[in-house]
Image (cartoon, rainbow, N blue to C red):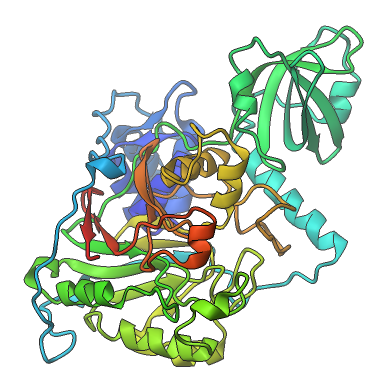
Length: 522
């Protein structure tokens, strides 16, 4: 992964368990080869250090420059000066009841669309993990094996520094009573007659049973497990070495040292999802109020619009949906959505991903739209990336995922860990597992590709989802998790399954501080 921006350098450091002084990151970014400089700095950093200091990076750069000039260079020594305090993450309200909701003014847009005084030359946006046009899966058995191996290797690499891992076949040959540690994919979870938990873990060599005693503090963590996620355990083998008694359990997780990046100027992004144009319950008036507000001076700093899926209502998504459609034809729905998008100021940068109501395959990862739909979506040259995608806006990395797996997380885990009323808590679980849809074979449909695009290889600064039509946000290990609600009033189907949507809200994110205001337009 290229490291040409400070945001990517910070993310790479966090993925390796390090924090860094701001100036240290700047010096790495300015180096002729940032990736090499970062690797050399981490190779020589003291084993007990968790923060990369400016002095240490300077010593590596000086040594490199000296080596390039001298025929017999001597390696430079790394400094060990204490770094300055880590910049704290700006405070973010964590709960719907603390949201800042304001009613917008009724100012109408100017006659010339996109006439706001915005300097678009300052904009910087990058997209990673977009698999649109890269699909290679054929559905063969070997494809599934390959994608699960890739998942295992990526997530195991984030756990190997925490336990002294041994493969399953090596553990089988160890003596009874030995201490052992294993990194594996959860292949089975069941309770014993005595109320203990038996968890089977699988690695690339085989499977091994692990027993979590019900009276151990870690027993509660078993209730957070999902099938097919990757975890690490350590403990003691039974006398016959046939089972591992677990003392500790670890998730890949977001490092607690994660320090989010921010924009270097005051600029904002509107984060929305689930517009559902074509539904009889699409809130057209609320949408008009939102787009009118975007043309006001109060919204002049809102330069980005990020939409996390379900732009249209779709066709045949749930039983008797046709009775609730205002627009029957799927292509006509996209034509209408494109017209609504034209109400957004023309100088705004728009990025979107598909959802389960959009006209792409249901299996995740979902590619962006085909050429026919892209030709329809002409408004503002809006870019459609795959679901999920990693969109870096002004240095702030936003993981955009529609969120179908949230249904599964909420159904499988205890209410205190995941619920529809607090959807961001379910998102915390995905961040902890470092995977947006860990469980295979359930409600969420997964497609095999040449690699697992659903792994969170890079820690995002913001995790943005939709799908469940509920508004909620909070902070997990300095990552802002946001589910942005919807623009569709309650349908008959939603009423039948007790979904009471949070509709007509627009979360506005300050990219320079990561503070957020939720505006209500319904």
